[in-house]
Image 1 (cartoon, rainbow, N blue to C red):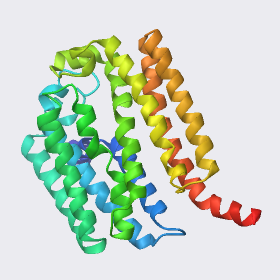
Image 2: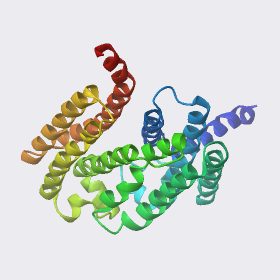
Image 3: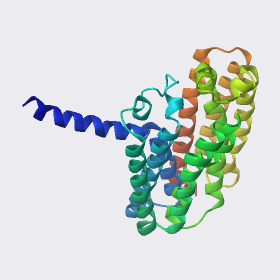
Image 4: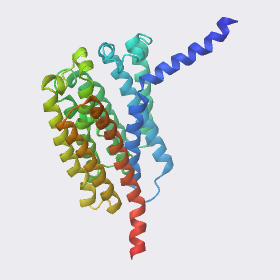
Length: 305
């Protein structure tokens, strides 16, 4: 009787371990950015069936990349407090189990994108998988302190994937969104690396605070927030968005710069954590404002007319 009762709990635990491999919080942000790209690609309400299929396919491939990343980095994850809980790091799941799980997710996601969306989106999404899981994780991350900068290209792709899913092409508007995320990535991750420096040192990763020191890293965070601020104005200057987005971009951008300036002038772990957490809100609210502007701006213009 005890064995009968224990089996479901064990099964549930195993499923939760597989789910943890997909890095749900990271993948949620990826899917959110892809969804923004889908919605911005259409002037009105998009094809919900197409958008749903694209969201599912992108989620599956992103989850596959996250699981593959857990295999490659399990020896690093064991040394870092932030990641030591992962099932691969704790030995709760074998490499074979994780690899099969990753392959199944990638195959399922690619099939959904190929048959129910379009081949362009499938190939772009698969290229993103290779860029993150292989080029960034295997090559860049352990070899260069510019890993976040160069590898940020794959992490910036979700809006382009969403745009391609709805239009079947790559537009300049989608490339602007990619540029924003690309420039947002370094200050976001370097703020984290500043207060997790010892974790990265133990893991043997050449993150910027380790190779060039915290002062240099803090300066880079500040400089990137200025460049990022300029990039966030592109949708307005290109007339992709209106005043609603512009106000949000200016407020969020200035706030990010102020935090980065404070971090540069006087460091504390608490301030680095605050900057890192705000960076997540910055990107989320920026894209939410872009979406709100997309639907409200035409209506406001018609009222003015």
